[in-house]
Length: 557
Image 1 (cartoon, rainbow, N blue to C red):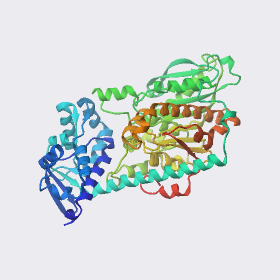
Image 2: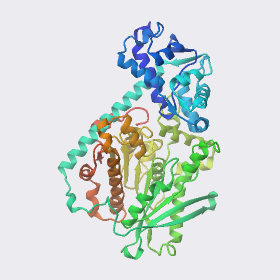
Image 3: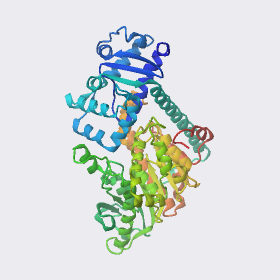
Image 4: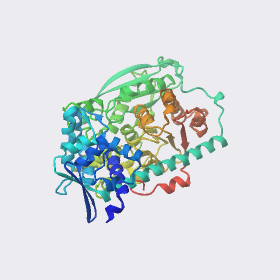
């Protein structure tokens, strides 16, 4: 039989497929019996035999056909996968799985792991995970097994293997793309070097110092009140020309305060930097979800409200310019900077529009078994389809003509598609991390870069870099980095943060202030020279042919 001849592949396909899908959820498995299904064939394994193997290493006759080709090291690794626990709090995890994003994650997982009756396992998985978390606050694969609420769990091995292939293909494509861009960037740096000794050190604070002005904005047209902070040079009179404006949009579950350091840095170099608090998708909203006060990670309307927050903030800066800001702001020259969901926001005010037809196809579980966290977020935009006014505004776009530059870090952008990204009509810089599991670099940044139509586009790739500093530190321990490199991780992350600060200042100098003497900072030679191991940065302005060949398949066209 097919299952008898392919036990090793099936077992690892199951582990890899489900593990990959659970990048946005948690592990799962069966109650008394695990039923592996592959087309018309099936094979049952008593759960107790798995538990015994995981806890003691003893292999039962029922389990032997699946493990006999594994080496002792591989068997030990499998046991670790099944028994490794994760500390969780039952209230946050219960709230997450009852949120729209959590429910969608379970819906996709439930296609792979079905109930005894062959139904989608979404509700059973939720019940098992919450029950396991409530027991002792530490959850493992075997804990989920013991709490699964039906007698058996039916696993679609064929679909699990499809997920496994997708995971391997995406990982391989990412490695190949990073390698090709790295080679291109290093070659460009050799062909067009820069002399760092002739350039100012933009990683250091500028000459003007900084001060902070706090605002409360009331947008009556949207019944929306939110805070914002503006960082300015300490003495406005010390700056010769009017100040271009940089707006920074924070990510999902984050806060404007995260970027105060960057804002103060840019202000010290002669810019006015404004940071809005996106209520409905900020840290306050996240805390409300985790404590049971709300059931949503963010409000779906934030796909519209976030870019409108930026435009209303700019309106207020114009209104207050003559008084609060002594007439020194130039609100006609604005850079939109964003991280993650804030990257979406920056691209949206830069002209990008959501391709809802394409998004509906991407979010169909029947057409796409593997969703990253960014796609789970993006799929929530489909909830807006019942609101005709919101849909019409989003289809028209939220472009603000005052935006002259977009800089998006670890951005969520696949929902725009090629048609939506082609609407961006300003210079654009995208930044992606090689090991970003939340917003994977290939579908979320490389593909988006390929869809930009302007020549003044920039794509930075960070080796061994994840979704942000904390995620990068986590990745440094568990993913690609050698243990010997961990000692310098904190210093290297700080160095990368400094390089990012310098890029924000340099791009703003070139494209807002029209100071061409800062263009060397926008070269491959600059980032190749100043970025540090193990988080080397590479730059491309035009994707090399091997990368273009890799950009095919669901979500990349």
